[in-house]
Length: 183
Image 1 (spheres, rainbow, N blue to C red):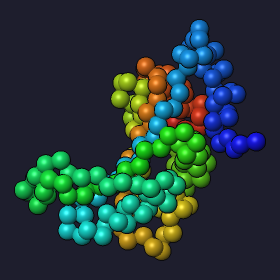
Image 2 (tube, rainbow, N blue to C red):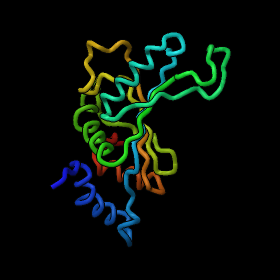
Image 3 (cartoon, rainbow, N blue to C red):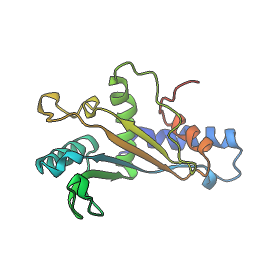
Image 4 (cartoon, helix red, strand yellow):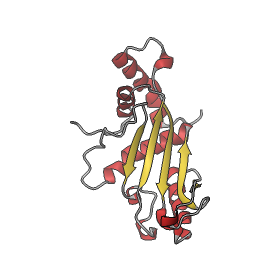
C-alpha cells in the first residue's frame, strides 16, 4: 500500500462532495482542485551580499522539502545597482504529494505559530481563482532553527487552483483547512 497525504485523501473523500453540493456541479471534473503552490522569497539585499541568496535557498529547501531555485533579475536598474541576470530571489513550485504535505504543515503547524493570529485575510484573490498569501517571518516554520537565522525575511505563497471564480477558490481553500477571517 502506498502513502497518500492526509489532505489529498480528505479532498477525494470529503471536499469534492462538499463543493459539488455547494455549487451544484454536474460532473466531478468541474470541481476545482489545487494545481500547485509556489513559495517565493525576494532577497533585495543580495545585491550587496551574495551569501544571502544561499541562505534563502537553504531555508526554502528546508521548509518545502524540495530544492529551491534562484530567480534572476530581468533588467538593469541603475538606482539599485542591479544588473540583468543577478540573483535576487528564490522560489519553489510544489505539485502533487509534496504540495499537499506543505499545505498540511502550513495549516496545522506554521500558521498557529504566528503571533496574535486570528485568520488570514480573504482579499488576496486575483479574480481568476488563485490566492496569494504573504508571510512576514520565516521563523514560524518548525523546520527553521531560530538560532541559525541570519536575517528575518518574509515570503509569498501562491495557491494556484483550477477554479474559475474567487468564490469557488475560497470555498476550496477553506475546505482544505486555510483559516480565513470571519467578516
